[in-house]
Image 1 (cartoon, rainbow, N blue to C red):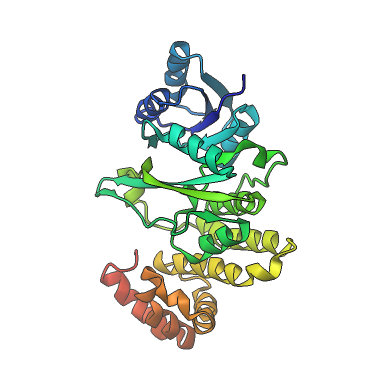
Image 2 (cartoon, rainbow, N blue to C red):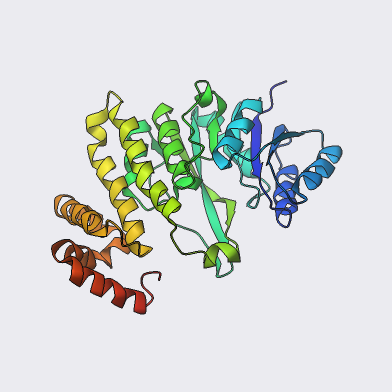
Length: 325
Protein backbone atom coordinates (compact mmCIF):
# COMPACT_ATOMS: atom_id res chain seq x y z
CA UNK A 1 0.00 0.00 0.00
CA UNK A 2 1.34 3.42 -0.98
CA UNK A 3 2.25 5.66 1.97
CA UNK A 4 0.49 9.00 2.10
CA UNK A 5 3.71 10.92 2.72
CA UNK A 6 7.41 10.15 2.36
CA UNK A 7 9.47 12.27 4.76
CA UNK A 8 12.95 12.71 3.27
CA UNK A 9 15.72 13.55 5.74
CA UNK A 10 19.26 14.21 4.42
CA UNK A 11 21.88 13.70 7.13
CA UNK A 12 25.51 14.76 7.29
CA UNK A 13 27.45 14.85 10.57
CA UNK A 14 24.61 16.02 12.82
CA UNK A 15 24.75 13.41 15.58
CA UNK A 16 23.99 16.00 18.29
CA UNK A 17 20.71 17.10 16.72
CA UNK A 18 19.48 14.06 14.81
CA UNK A 19 17.43 12.41 17.55
CA UNK A 20 15.17 15.44 17.99
CA UNK A 21 14.51 15.46 14.26
CA UNK A 22 13.75 11.73 14.09
CA UNK A 23 11.56 11.84 17.20
CA UNK A 24 9.47 14.60 15.63
CA UNK A 25 8.84 12.44 12.57
CA UNK A 26 8.20 9.15 14.36
CA UNK A 27 5.68 10.95 16.58
CA UNK A 28 3.61 12.33 13.69
CA UNK A 29 -0.14 11.99 14.16
CA UNK A 30 -0.34 10.78 10.56
CA UNK A 31 0.98 7.24 10.91
CA UNK A 32 0.77 6.29 7.23
CA UNK A 33 4.18 7.76 6.40
CA UNK A 34 7.47 6.51 5.06
CA UNK A 35 10.64 7.91 6.65
CA UNK A 36 13.61 7.97 4.28
CA UNK A 37 16.86 8.95 5.97
CA UNK A 38 19.72 9.62 3.57
CA UNK A 39 23.13 9.37 5.22
CA UNK A 40 25.32 11.50 2.99
CA UNK A 41 28.69 10.05 3.95
CA UNK A 42 28.65 11.14 7.60
CA UNK A 43 31.90 10.60 9.50
CA UNK A 44 30.40 10.93 12.99
CA UNK A 45 27.86 8.65 14.71
CA UNK A 46 24.90 9.76 12.60
CA UNK A 47 24.57 6.43 10.77
CA UNK A 48 24.64 4.49 14.05
CA UNK A 49 21.81 6.65 15.40
CA UNK A 50 19.75 6.15 12.24
CA UNK A 51 20.31 2.39 12.40
CA UNK A 52 19.16 2.24 16.03
CA UNK A 53 15.96 4.10 15.15
CA UNK A 54 15.34 1.88 12.11
CA UNK A 55 15.45 -1.21 14.33
CA UNK A 56 12.61 0.25 16.40
CA UNK A 57 10.45 1.63 13.58
CA UNK A 58 9.91 -0.33 10.36
CA UNK A 59 8.79 2.83 8.52
CA UNK A 60 12.40 4.05 8.44
CA UNK A 61 14.33 3.37 5.23
CA UNK A 62 18.08 4.04 5.26
CA UNK A 63 19.87 5.25 2.14
CA UNK A 64 23.62 5.18 2.80
CA UNK A 65 25.72 6.91 0.16
CA UNK A 66 29.03 8.73 -0.34
CA UNK A 67 29.04 12.45 0.37
CA UNK A 68 27.77 14.47 -2.59
CA UNK A 69 26.02 17.36 -0.88
CA UNK A 70 22.47 18.29 0.09
CA UNK A 71 20.98 18.43 -3.40
CA UNK A 72 22.07 14.92 -4.33
CA UNK A 73 21.05 13.57 -0.92
CA UNK A 74 17.52 14.88 -1.53
CA UNK A 75 17.59 13.43 -5.03
CA UNK A 76 18.49 10.00 -3.63
CA UNK A 77 15.66 10.31 -1.13
CA UNK A 78 13.12 11.14 -3.82
CA UNK A 79 14.29 8.19 -5.93
CA UNK A 80 13.71 5.87 -2.95
CA UNK A 81 10.33 7.36 -2.02
CA UNK A 82 6.94 5.71 -2.59
CA UNK A 83 4.57 8.22 -0.98
CA UNK A 84 1.97 10.24 -2.85
CA UNK A 85 3.61 13.34 -1.38
CA UNK A 86 7.11 14.10 -0.12
CA UNK A 87 8.00 16.22 2.89
CA UNK A 88 11.57 17.52 2.92
CA UNK A 89 13.12 17.91 6.37
CA UNK A 90 16.75 18.76 7.10
CA UNK A 91 18.30 16.52 9.74
CA UNK A 92 18.83 19.27 12.29
CA UNK A 93 15.32 20.72 11.92
CA UNK A 94 12.07 19.26 13.28
CA UNK A 95 8.31 19.19 12.68
CA UNK A 96 5.26 19.87 14.80
CA UNK A 97 3.48 16.58 15.68
CA UNK A 98 0.52 17.16 13.32
CA UNK A 99 2.50 18.66 10.42
CA UNK A 100 2.17 15.77 7.97
CA UNK A 101 -1.50 15.23 8.81
CA UNK A 102 -2.46 18.87 8.23
CA UNK A 103 -0.37 19.20 5.07
CA UNK A 104 -1.71 15.96 3.60
CA UNK A 105 -5.29 16.96 4.37
CA UNK A 106 -4.81 20.40 2.78
CA UNK A 107 -3.26 18.90 -0.36
CA UNK A 108 -6.03 16.33 -0.75
CA UNK A 109 -8.85 18.82 -0.16
CA UNK A 110 -7.49 21.32 -2.68
CA UNK A 111 -5.89 18.93 -5.19
CA UNK A 112 -2.69 20.97 -4.87
CA UNK A 113 0.75 20.04 -6.14
CA UNK A 114 2.48 21.97 -3.34
CA UNK A 115 1.41 23.13 0.12
CA UNK A 116 3.39 26.02 1.63
CA UNK A 117 3.49 25.98 5.43
CA UNK A 118 4.36 28.55 8.06
CA UNK A 119 7.63 27.98 9.91
CA UNK A 120 9.60 29.22 12.88
CA UNK A 121 13.28 30.12 12.95
CA UNK A 122 14.89 28.80 16.13
CA UNK A 123 18.29 30.37 16.80
CA UNK A 124 20.53 31.22 19.77
CA UNK A 125 19.03 34.72 19.57
CA UNK A 126 15.49 33.45 20.07
CA UNK A 127 12.54 32.30 18.00
CA UNK A 128 10.77 34.28 15.30
CA UNK A 129 8.29 33.72 12.50
CA UNK A 130 9.10 35.35 9.15
CA UNK A 131 6.44 36.96 6.92
CA UNK A 132 4.17 34.47 5.18
CA UNK A 133 2.68 34.28 1.71
CA UNK A 134 -0.35 36.57 1.42
CA UNK A 135 -2.64 34.53 -0.86
CA UNK A 136 -4.35 31.18 -0.36
CA UNK A 137 -3.59 29.91 -3.86
CA UNK A 138 -1.03 30.44 -6.64
CA UNK A 139 -0.32 29.07 -10.08
CA UNK A 140 3.21 28.48 -11.35
CA UNK A 141 3.63 31.98 -12.81
CA UNK A 142 2.34 33.86 -9.77
CA UNK A 143 4.38 31.65 -7.40
CA UNK A 144 7.64 32.38 -9.22
CA UNK A 145 6.75 36.07 -9.33
CA UNK A 146 6.16 36.04 -5.56
CA UNK A 147 9.41 34.19 -4.87
CA UNK A 148 11.37 36.77 -6.85
CA UNK A 149 9.68 39.84 -5.38
CA UNK A 150 9.17 38.96 -1.73
CA UNK A 151 11.70 38.33 1.02
CA UNK A 152 10.86 34.67 1.67
CA UNK A 153 13.36 31.93 2.46
CA UNK A 154 13.56 29.87 -0.70
CA UNK A 155 14.96 26.84 1.12
CA UNK A 156 11.74 26.58 3.15
CA UNK A 157 9.10 27.33 0.54
CA UNK A 158 8.23 24.11 -1.28
CA UNK A 159 8.98 21.43 1.30
CA UNK A 160 5.68 19.55 0.93
CA UNK A 161 5.00 18.55 -2.65
CA UNK A 162 3.40 15.90 -4.82
CA UNK A 163 6.00 13.25 -5.61
CA UNK A 164 5.04 12.97 -9.27
CA UNK A 165 6.42 16.49 -9.81
CA UNK A 166 9.71 14.59 -9.98
CA UNK A 167 8.55 12.10 -12.63
CA UNK A 168 11.04 13.84 -14.89
CA UNK A 169 14.10 14.55 -12.68
CA UNK A 170 14.84 18.21 -12.08
CA UNK A 171 18.30 19.59 -12.78
CA UNK A 172 20.62 19.16 -9.80
CA UNK A 173 24.09 20.67 -9.75
CA UNK A 174 26.51 18.91 -7.44
CA UNK A 175 28.94 21.81 -7.21
CA UNK A 176 26.30 24.46 -6.50
CA UNK A 177 26.58 24.88 -2.73
CA UNK A 178 24.82 28.25 -2.49
CA UNK A 179 21.52 28.94 -4.21
CA UNK A 180 20.74 25.29 -4.94
CA UNK A 181 17.41 25.68 -3.11
CA UNK A 182 16.49 28.66 -5.27
CA UNK A 183 17.37 26.85 -8.48
CA UNK A 184 15.45 23.70 -7.54
CA UNK A 185 12.48 25.66 -6.18
CA UNK A 186 12.07 27.57 -9.43
CA UNK A 187 11.99 24.31 -11.39
CA UNK A 188 9.45 22.68 -9.06
CA UNK A 189 7.26 25.79 -8.97
CA UNK A 190 7.17 25.95 -12.76
CA UNK A 191 5.97 22.33 -12.97
CA UNK A 192 3.13 22.95 -10.52
CA UNK A 193 -0.39 23.75 -11.63
CA UNK A 194 -1.69 24.63 -8.19
CA UNK A 195 0.15 25.80 -5.06
CA UNK A 196 -1.74 26.51 -1.83
CA UNK A 197 -0.82 27.85 1.59
CA UNK A 198 -1.65 26.44 5.02
CA UNK A 199 -2.15 29.22 7.54
CA UNK A 200 -3.28 27.33 10.65
CA UNK A 201 -0.02 27.57 12.57
CA UNK A 202 3.77 27.13 12.10
CA UNK A 203 4.55 23.48 11.38
CA UNK A 204 8.28 23.49 10.61
CA UNK A 205 11.15 24.50 12.90
CA UNK A 206 14.19 25.78 11.03
CA UNK A 207 17.11 25.55 13.45
CA UNK A 208 20.10 27.88 13.17
CA UNK A 209 23.08 26.78 15.25
CA UNK A 210 25.58 29.06 16.96
CA UNK A 211 28.23 28.08 14.41
CA UNK A 212 25.94 29.24 11.58
CA UNK A 213 25.30 32.57 13.27
CA UNK A 214 29.00 33.32 13.56
CA UNK A 215 29.92 32.25 10.01
CA UNK A 216 29.49 35.53 8.16
CA UNK A 217 32.39 35.74 5.72
CA UNK A 218 32.29 35.10 2.00
CA UNK A 219 34.80 32.82 0.32
CA UNK A 220 35.58 32.89 -3.38
CA UNK A 221 33.71 29.60 -3.79
CA UNK A 222 30.58 31.00 -2.14
CA UNK A 223 30.83 34.14 -4.23
CA UNK A 224 31.07 32.12 -7.43
CA UNK A 225 27.92 30.25 -6.38
CA UNK A 226 26.05 33.46 -5.54
CA UNK A 227 26.87 34.77 -9.01
CA UNK A 228 26.07 31.45 -10.71
CA UNK A 229 22.58 30.64 -9.49
CA UNK A 230 20.89 33.75 -11.01
CA UNK A 231 22.42 32.75 -14.36
CA UNK A 232 21.03 29.23 -14.03
CA UNK A 233 17.57 30.52 -13.13
CA UNK A 234 17.65 33.02 -15.99
CA UNK A 235 18.61 30.28 -18.47
CA UNK A 236 15.81 28.05 -17.19
CA UNK A 237 13.10 30.73 -17.24
CA UNK A 238 14.13 32.11 -20.62
CA UNK A 239 13.76 28.60 -22.01
CA UNK A 240 10.06 28.47 -21.09
CA UNK A 241 7.18 29.55 -23.37
CA UNK A 242 6.22 32.18 -20.77
CA UNK A 243 9.70 33.74 -20.70
CA UNK A 244 8.46 37.30 -21.27
CA UNK A 245 6.40 37.10 -18.09
CA UNK A 246 9.55 36.33 -16.11
CA UNK A 247 11.72 39.25 -17.32
CA UNK A 248 11.17 41.37 -14.21
CA UNK A 249 11.55 38.34 -11.93
CA UNK A 250 14.99 37.64 -13.38
CA UNK A 251 16.06 41.22 -12.61
CA UNK A 252 14.85 40.89 -9.02
CA UNK A 253 16.68 37.60 -8.51
CA UNK A 254 19.96 38.97 -9.85
CA UNK A 255 19.54 42.13 -7.76
CA UNK A 256 19.19 40.01 -4.62
CA UNK A 257 22.37 38.09 -5.42
CA UNK A 258 24.41 41.25 -5.91
CA UNK A 259 22.87 42.83 -2.83
CA UNK A 260 23.93 39.83 -0.74
CA UNK A 261 27.53 40.31 -1.86
CA UNK A 262 27.30 43.98 -0.88
CA UNK A 263 26.09 43.04 2.61
CA UNK A 264 28.90 40.51 2.91
CA UNK A 265 31.46 43.19 1.95
CA UNK A 266 32.70 41.36 -1.15
CA UNK A 267 34.52 44.13 -3.05
CA UNK A 268 35.52 42.38 -6.28
CA UNK A 269 33.23 43.46 -9.14
CA UNK A 270 31.11 45.55 -6.78
CA UNK A 271 31.21 48.69 -8.94
CA UNK A 272 29.55 46.82 -11.81
CA UNK A 273 27.13 45.13 -9.44
CA UNK A 274 26.09 48.46 -7.89
CA UNK A 275 25.58 49.99 -11.33
CA UNK A 276 23.25 47.13 -12.18
CA UNK A 277 21.42 47.58 -8.86
CA UNK A 278 21.14 51.35 -9.32
CA UNK A 279 19.68 50.87 -12.80
CA UNK A 280 17.29 48.27 -11.44
CA UNK A 281 16.16 50.61 -8.65
CA UNK A 282 15.46 53.31 -11.24
CA UNK A 283 13.47 50.92 -13.44
CA UNK A 284 11.69 49.05 -10.64
CA UNK A 285 11.12 51.46 -7.70
CA UNK A 286 9.31 48.69 -5.80
CA UNK A 287 12.73 47.18 -5.06
CA UNK A 288 13.19 49.92 -2.48
CA UNK A 289 10.20 48.54 -0.58
CA UNK A 290 12.28 45.53 0.45
CA UNK A 291 13.16 46.33 4.06
CA UNK A 292 16.89 45.62 3.90
CA UNK A 293 17.38 47.26 0.52
CA UNK A 294 15.79 50.51 1.70
CA UNK A 295 18.60 51.03 4.21
CA UNK A 296 21.30 50.75 1.56
CA UNK A 297 19.92 52.53 -1.52
CA UNK A 298 22.11 55.58 -0.86
CA UNK A 299 25.23 53.40 -0.73
CA UNK A 300 24.25 51.53 -3.91
CA UNK A 301 23.72 54.73 -5.90
CA UNK A 302 26.88 56.32 -4.51
CA UNK A 303 28.96 53.23 -5.34
CA UNK A 304 27.55 53.22 -8.88
CA UNK A 305 28.41 56.89 -9.49
CA UNK A 306 31.72 57.12 -7.66
CA UNK A 307 33.37 53.81 -6.71
CA UNK A 308 36.01 55.28 -4.41
CA UNK A 309 33.35 57.10 -2.39
CA UNK A 310 31.31 53.92 -2.37
CA UNK A 311 34.24 52.01 -0.90
CA UNK A 312 34.74 54.75 1.69
CA UNK A 313 31.08 54.59 2.75
CA UNK A 314 31.24 50.80 2.79
CA UNK A 315 34.06 51.04 5.33
CA UNK A 316 31.82 53.34 7.39
CA UNK A 317 28.97 50.81 7.24
CA UNK A 318 31.38 48.06 8.30
CA UNK A 319 32.53 50.19 11.23
CA UNK A 320 28.90 50.69 12.28
CA UNK A 321 28.23 46.96 12.01
CA UNK A 322 25.65 47.35 9.22
CA UNK A 323 27.83 45.36 6.81
CA UNK A 324 29.85 42.32 7.82
CA UNK A 325 33.60 42.82 7.91
